[in-house]
Length: 257
Image (cartoon, rainbow, N blue to C red; front, side, top):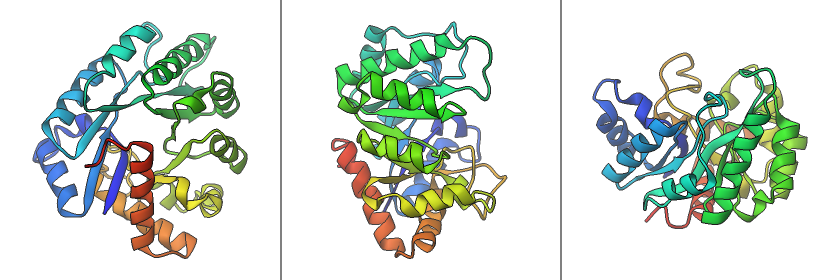
């Protein structure tokens, strides 16, 4: 059995068969659970509605770092969003200096709001970081994000960053990027990660793994990430699937019944 620890099901609604087909296909192929991630206020409502409709789907609430600076939650508002019974995480949140420029203090301030909401609700953080590894990790450390825990999702950073995340109790989630031929540094990190701290994800509809690279990603493709990791690490597929699923359940004990 597999768990897709990061997916945007709401963005797959226009695919053939819609979300029903995506969830059914995943279930038929051994994906027992999907965490559906919000990126802005509108999608917070969407992912909560989706999670309420499927027993094997849970949700996160938050605002992605690249969403316009004018869109903000207060800590109190985000805590209220997270009170929904199917919401198990806060995010995705973090820092992205690749797609944003200028004075990005607003991005860092919004990140801190999410960390505080996570600590108040004790719901783990879903972290996005791109070209901002030092600031991302420093803020997590300074704001005691370890109290809530969380995931560095779609990990593409170096071993030093992975080690800092592991040191504060975070999990590392690997996406289809790890299967790409040019992802040699990431593959070297993936070999070194302790298996009991690895999660797998699709980030669907983005970043489809080999052999579907360039196509619309789907939750069912998380199996390809697991298959690649098993070969990369010299492990069995069964052990990768079982351990990454157990890791998710340890981080989110109420998610998978």
